[in-house]
Image (tube, rainbow, N blue to C red):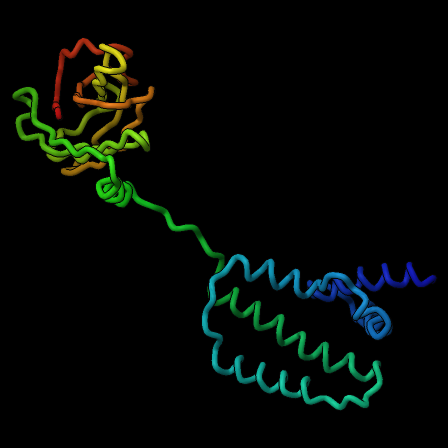
Length: 247
């Protein structure tokens, strides 16, 4: 086997060693090639594996027993006899490296895979309240069946984002009808913009509803909730007006 083929074989074995899937015969072959090629690699497979695994976790203290063992083996490695031949240096390095990989795996087992934080509608509502340029309007009931309805709507032109907080709005059967929001923007059009349909489940006294405007809204002056057929309508006849919030 020529020098180039030997180096390629070493890299193949070294990758397998880093991932822990070498047979005993392959590991013996790696040990024979390591003194010659270990310092010739441009990229360490151990470094790549560790970086990949740690990228998915956040830092956490190691168990004291594992930390102590790592300290002991690290000291042994650092204080090794410099007069040893290259063949003799391979084994201490592998021993220390094995503990290093074990430490990384221990961290992963303790933490488990990291997951992105899910921001709730309630949190988004409060953030938008504090954002500059947001407008906050109070809902008032628009007909007797909904006399107890109250709440507020928050809207931000720049973000094109808004939410409704509704209290005491009666539950609906989505197979029979759905609530629909309309946004009046006089500077845009005389027709209101569809703000999306939504439902109120049984047993819910307070609901937070994201606004799903179909078109750009710049300076709304009125938010109107109506009761419509399932799926909503393109143009409301306003036969059942539930609540209104106006500037």
